[in-house]
Image (cartoon, rainbow, N blue to C red; front, side, top):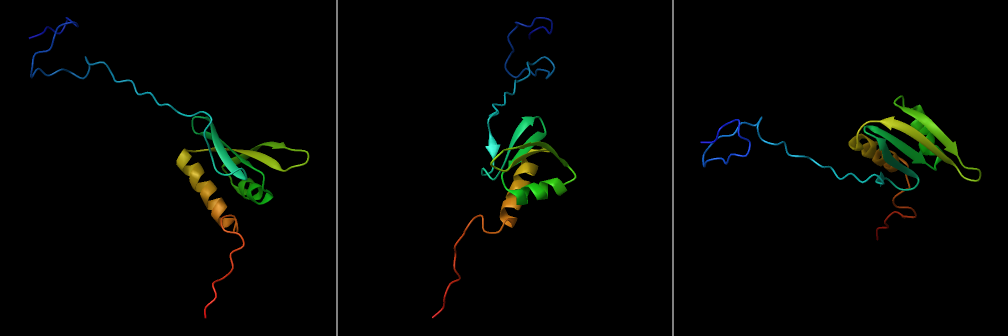
Length: 120
């Protein structure tokens, strides 16, 4: 059997090893720092752990974000165009759900110019 003081000693088959003596496995998360979510009208990206910025070019989305209590306006930019940026704390799941809900409630965002089906 190997001695506990000798770190280079080989383990015998069937020998139990304490988790304290094993080297911890390093978890590397390859996070894409340029990742964003959403179309150009309403998109979000992560700036810090659990801090996201949401940018919109639509006044309707801007009004909705201004009404939220967990957002704050960070930037207003644009001379000939509308663009506002808001800060929101949370997770990617929360941000995706907010953006998806706003896009669905926007009405004709997904399927414009669809006429009702006619029956014969």
